[in-house]
Each structure stands twice: as C-alpha cells, then as structure tokens.
Amino acid sequence: MLAAVYCRVSTEKDDQINSLESQMSYFLNYIENCPDLTLFQIYADKGISGTAVKNRTRFIQMMEDAEKGLFQVIITKEVSRFSRNILDAVSYSRKLRNLGVSIRFMNDGIDTSQPDAELRLSIMASLAQEESRKTSDRVKWGQTRRMEKGVVFGTSMLGYDVKKGKIAVNTDGAEIVKNIFNKYVFLHMSASEIAKELQNEGIKTYTGKEKWTPSVIIKVLKNEKYCGDLRQKKTFTPDYLTHKKKTNKCNEKTVFIKDHHAPIISRDLWEAAQQELCSRSHVKKQDSGRSNKFYFSGKIICTNCGCPFSARKKKGKDGYYTVWKCLNNQCHVRYQIRNDSLMYMTAYSYSLLNIQNEKLTEHIHSLMNMAEIQLTGTSTTSLKQKKSEIEELKIKKLNIIDAYATRKISEDEFMALKSKYDSLIIHHNNEIENLQKTQSVKKLKNTTIKKYIDKIINYNNITKSIIYNCIEKVHAYENGIVKLKFCHLPQVFEFEIYFKKSKQYTT
Ligand SMILES: [Zn+2]
View 1 (cartoon, rainbow, N blue to C red):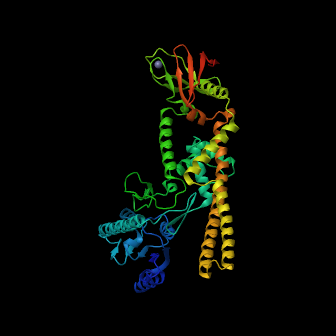
View 2: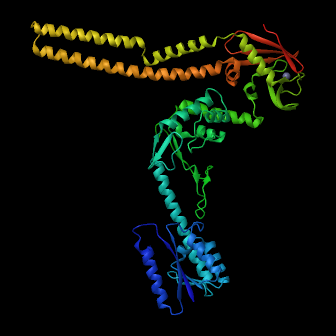
C-alpha cells in the first residue's frame, strides 16, 4: 500500500518534539517497520492553527491526491493535528473511506479501516475541540487583561501611529482629523461635503486613496481615540473554529479606558460631534433625501395652531423639491412653502441687513483676542513691558559696577547682586521667547478662524450655517404672510406667499 504522511509543524521554536525533522524520522521509522507500506509523499503544513482548514494548502493538496487515488493510507500523528473540528474529522474520514483511503492516527491508536474507528474518532475529536475552545478562552482572557492594562491592540490609523501596543499622535494626520471635526461641528457640513472638500484639496486618505467616502468621515467622527479614550474588543470572534470577526454588539464586554493617551481634539468637541451625529441621523430617518431642508426643521411655526411645519418631498417638472406644510392635519392653514423660497427669503433678508463682512470679521477677531488675553494674560503690551524691564536691569547692573568701583559695596555684595540681575535677565528673555512663540501660533490660528468666519457670513453664498445659526423663527400666518426673524436682531422680515411664487415686502 502506498502511504501518505500528514504532519503539521509547530510554530514555536523550542517545540523540538513537533519539529519537521523529528516528525519525519518518526514516520519513516514507522513505515520501515510495516512491510505492507511504502512511502508515497510527506505533506507538511507550517505554523498554522489547526482549527481552520482553509489555510492548510498541503492538506488540501493531499485531499486532491487522495481523490486521484494516488495513495491508500494516510498516516498522521494525532486527531488534533489532522483536524481540530469534530465535524471535519468525521467528514474527512468518511470521505476518504469512500475513496478507499484509511487514516491511521498513531498517538490515538485509531485506524479508520477498523469498524469501531468512527465512534472512537468522534470521542477523540470532541476532546480535541474542547481543548481548542479552552485555548481560545485562555488567549482571550490574556488579551483582555492586557487591554485593561492599556496595551493597544490593532493597527495605526489617521492621526495615530500604533506600535508595539503603544499609541502616539501623528501630527500630519492629526491636522486632518481636527479639520474634519471642525467642519462637521462648527460649519455644519455633512460627511459627504467634507469628503468632497478633502478630495478637492488633494488630501489622501490614510490608506493612500484619493477618494474620500462619507462613511470614512463618519468613522473618524465616531472614533473615541481622538479625544484620548480607548475602547477595545469592538469586534470579537464568536466561533473559535472559523476565527471570523464580528462587530461586538454587547455580546462581550468592551474594555474602556478614559484619558488613555494624548487627545487630538478636545473632549467638548468630541461630545458635540457625537450629539450632532445623533441628531442628524434622527432627522435623516424622519425624511430621507439629500437637501438642506432639515436646517429649517422646528423653526417654522404655524401661527393658527402653534404646530411646526414639517417637510415633504414632491415631484416636479425638474426633479424632486421640498415643501413645508403645517404638521396639524386638522388645521385650516393648508398652503405650502417651498424650501427654495425659504432659502431665497433668508438670503434676501440677510442681504438687507447690509452686513459689512470685512468689518464684522475684524470685530469678531478683536473680541476673540480680548477674550484670549483675559484668559492667558498675554498681550503685546506685556512683551513691551518685559523688554523695558530687561533694559532697567541692565542699567542696575551698570550702577552696581560703579558702586563696586567706588567701594560703596563689597565684592560679596557685588557678586550677589550681579548674579541676581543676570538670572532675572535670563528669565525675562525666556519669557519673551515664549510670548513670541505663542503669538506666531496665534497668528496662524487667527488666519484659520478668519477663513471660517468668512465662510459662514458670506451672504452671496447663503450657507446652511446661516440658517442653522442665525434664523430664530419663521412664523407662517393664515393669510399667506411669512415673517422671518434672525437671532439677536430686532428686525422682522415679512413676505407674502403667492401660490408658487413668493413676493417680498419688508418692514
Ligand atoms: Zn396649523
């Protein structure tokens, strides 16, 4: 009979007993002592866990050769090396038996050509399976303990490098992360708008792709690592036989550590982003569709019944459009306001406010600077002050030299005063340097802020931000009069609705 040998070689270096050489000499010795056997081929798989058959290329080859009838018997060491899955072990032994191939499990003393083999195999295989489950539990337990100690499992991502279980900020990536959060929370941009903008700016994704998808943006916004926290075991392996990962939806406890590493964005910003994510997904569920309409939601009030107007989609000549209507079906206010009319009313009213963008930007700026000076206590005046203090100290130094030369003070007194003045000068110089540094950072910050402000208040391009931030209420009256009020402003803008067109009157 021609005999095939199957062995699985251990991955552990010091596991000499299971090395390829020792297994080979064992099998060769065995075949030599069986006069009815001749070696056909040795099939050896290296360093792969026995639980999944998929990765065992030599094993698969052996099964193919068995189908071709190239050998009649397979010799292998034990059930756990052949297969750790009871179903697999039994099904392979049956399949092989149908092909006229038997298996000899040496250590377990099972020969599948014998009638009691299947029963014995089942017992052995189920023991092996239990062992595999225990090992899997042990590995999991060890991993969980290490997670609790703060060891990071997983790979690097946008803004963070993960190496040997440690996480560190990647400055280039961190800038993109901050950018995404700011755009989402402060500019009220949608994930797809942010994706488009990043793409247009030629910024590549973490994986080096040019195309940014909204889902990548959402993933970034939801990642707690950016505010310094760490949640692990987000995925888990429910089946230790297939090793397939699944999203952990409360199946197993996650490991959470607050303030685990250096954050990229503040906790406040992260929490604001989570709230936005939650409320925006809520709005989306209510009325699907891609438009700006939800920026008016809750702001249009029916003066007849007090209910808010709700949005609905309508099909027109050139595609879909959105209209607003009193939510209350019993209300006799039945007219509809088109969403684009509302956008137009907002833009028109905004233009009437005659806001001088340049001046407003400057004003906001100076207010912010004042706030910052009050917080940090630094300004250009303190820089001047420091410089004049240094000049004074230099004069004092000259004076004590005079005093020492004219013997008004002793050498000891002179030395003590000199070192005191010197160290003060060094101290002031250091402070000046720090001040100049923070000022250059501030300059950079200011230009970024300026860009943001410009974007928000540029009325030629009426943005959702204006509606979202500046419109307080829109009151809809029975007779088709619509009154629009901006936050913090006394003016009310009045419009009259004519069927589909809207005409403007202002007061
Ligand atoms: Zn109503």
